[in-house]
Image (cartoon, rainbow, N blue to C red; front, side, top):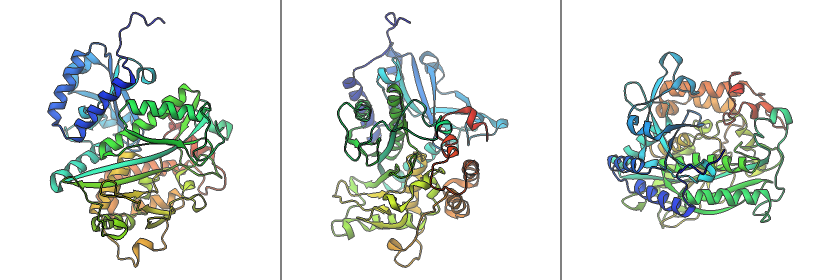
Length: 476
């Protein structure tokens, strides 16, 4: 179909980067929400080449959902956008299905037309209950409220940066067809930092990095990871809600670019036995009045007392929150000590088998790295559980807590039992949301063999929460 008569917005990558960096700076500077709302509504009204706004939100497991609203409709109805919550796993029951979507105007993102289509902008939504209050199962909203409360109460700005690994496999929908093929096909058999300029993995990494740069990610470095066909594309830290949004965008970009190349970007934690799995190392810090609260040049490993207390609380609750950081059956294949897996509930500056690492840092970069996070975890749940636990959690009276011989669960059933039995997780989410999440994880676990064994079973992939296949999920 000819497109020569259409005049939809399609900006250069340089123009996109300027727009996105400006929006990111407004967010970081905490420009008042009503001012940003006014600016964005005026922009949408004046920019005639925009046809639709893609509104994004995440369900309880972190699956990203998107609705396209016609621009003219949205400009008239932006304060009354309803949707059927009963169709979203982990949201409302059918008898109470009506929910609303608010718009977080500060999160607006401009995407490249050659990747996401011309004439669109993207923005994250906030799920609102029938009574007008934030919806308890919208963990993005829970995280945002917690972060705002920390800033108002203590002057804390919560920052995070994530190192998200994934695999690039040959063929479109490789995960969906795994139950038919029983294997994934590498596109590259190199290793750490090794790829040739023309091979599919390098083409994928280069293209994805270009898209990220245009969308204001502030890239740092990218490279093939240690396993064949594995990648990591790093970008700079951000305020905690923006950082979690970027994880969702990162995975969306990777999947979109891979699809255009006839491949699949997979964020299964351990899609192939015998090689390293994929992680999402989560680097966190807390700022107050421009000062990094993690830094102390005289502290142990140059980490402050605040930083070590933050670590001790996470170590105390490591088993309680494990299933929030490692939410799938497949994730427990990754927690294998033979592949540098961080399954030991301890902290170390050098031991990569530790749940928490204390990286070399300075006044600006000092941070805590939580390593036992899977790339398929709900990013909002990861950020919320890590920061709230680190700031408000308990500290166990365990001798030599930071180096004690304690280990994370090696299967989802034990992780689920720990989560259910922990009073702390009730404090985090309340009984209702905790129960809903438990039921979803139980359903996933019951679909798969209890003992993982030495091969990746088809149901681990077939019923994985990131496989978008309505038919398969209706089998529950």
